[in-house]
Image (cartoon, rainbow, N blue to C red; front, side, top):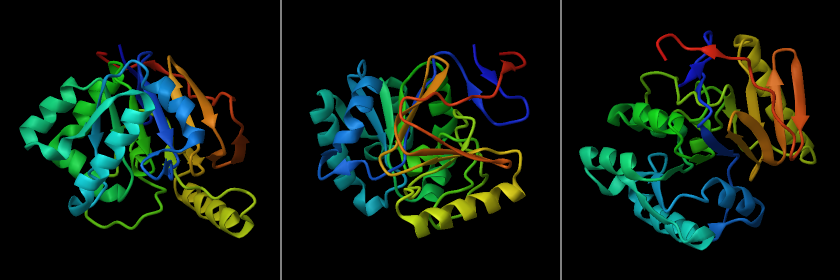
Length: 255
């Protein structure tokens, strides 16, 4: 049974398992050391991983598939392959059969447009609510939020709606600069605060490079920092291992 925040686009279930990564998680052709433990935990029971690379330009998707397939093989002998190799109908069938999914980074607006155009957004949401592990980095992390609102990339294409998967009760901001990079850090914070002036009911979860948060069995925790929780009334840094407070839920109608 799924539940949802009635005034938001958040939908969830006790089976939902989502790992959002702030980006820059690769070292060459493998996942960087800080991300390995959380990635292994998240995909421990997944033999096959469906890659969604719509955020990568079509000319570069074959190369990105090879890179990520190698990284997943090294991670735990997972077989990973990209949906872009199939026709639209075959891609839907492949995504319905894989045991886990990973959505890569790149252009968020291109990713959202293609997910809506192919019907994959709704299908992926349904599978995630039923328990299929979802992982996403940068643009793929943006997609876990309720709407696309604080991305760092240009709107390279039109989108039919800003609504995303909505499996996390936030708007995601990846690649958030660390505090030691004072100018960039303060500049990003100011931009997010300006966004929240226009959207005071929303909550922005900002993830530094390689930072990771995981929602699993109804609890959300920081696996790798730094992470900041922004709201209209202020912000708080959440340290590694700390739980992230979630809105209270009530059952959705007819769920």
